[in-house]
Image 1 (cartoon, helix red, strand yellow):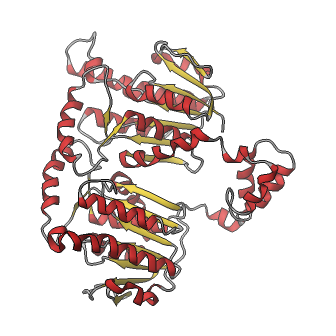
Image 2 (spheres, rainbow, N blue to C red; image 1 turned 120 degrees about the vertical axis):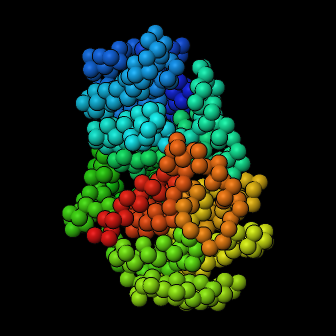
Image 3 (cartoon, rainbow, N blue to C red; image 1 turned 135 degrees about the horizontal axis):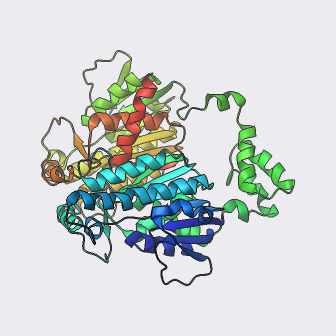
Length: 520
């Protein structure tokens, strides 16, 4: 791949790890550290430039021939107050200048000099409408950089950093006290600075990201697992030799007819293979489809739903019907339920013998699963049978009958290695359904569900006690069942999702905004 990059904020907790990750991944030929002072560092591909961020427009040459910018820049309320009067407004102005103005102005100059990609560290709970200065500032940065229209703008929203700070941060320490008991239920509220840095590098090296993309804490955990792949090898396209051409035709690197056009261009001796791949794809795509230009290319399809009587499932049926994107919606369950939609069908089955009901899955395009119970309602063994076995066996039979897509509701904090039954079961069912190899497998991991329940859930009620104060800091910990359902339908209708994809709580809140476009 061999890109060039600049980094601002290289002296901070994430910035230091980011520089190490960039060097280790072997994907960058040049790394420019831009800051207010030089730092002790000796590496052949590292350059350093000292600038005045109050006059960053005077340093445009630094950004020439740079492909991607990384920003881990920021300060604290306490550091902003140094040397200033104790007037709160003065301190807030200084913090905003560093955290917002310096970052946005740097991005502006970089964009004007041709930088196409920007990777930004923001924060869990960032919102331009927050009444807390920190989150409001982070939200304003995201908004203003998005307006610059980078080809790729990845916003990393990590939770609480697990790292050693050079300075004390009282607010961060306070939030840690709130987060600590919740870490018993989920690992998605905090993250090591090292993992954030690795995920940022993965974002820069990924070729399938365009426009504004938000990676929340859980997504950062997932993406950092790909980091070692970039350390082991260069871009697969650049490594391809004449003897590997058959791999292209077998679809291991490129798919469909654009691979043939790509090979012709390579055979002609062209050098920029990455660019030529895009050219080949553009030639190969039918003009009619190119003219549509929609991100949600959907034909009327058929879908089945298991778990339609639950909190999410009930809203899911409404969303599927309202979207007008499905010619057939089939509810599969242990009993019939009262329906308010005429064009919804029902099939009553025995989940203990799901293989005897294979015919109900024929001619289905996508399956939705919101199936689940509680330990209090079904006991430990009954809970696992419903939340894992019933779900997995349904997915197996559906896959055997030709269903290509599966949308599964699990939970924030799903982890097959957890010592708690609930998140461990959710993690195991994710793992086992993923092994079936659906063309699209979308895992939906909502936070605390806001909506009426038919039964009391003690664990959920307890978690709500801890979540309530955190909702003052972030809107990404809880979500309504209606919004989860809308996001699931958006996911099913999106043609950009391939293979296994995880949407955490914040991503669900973002994606559900596209639902109304489907209905129109």
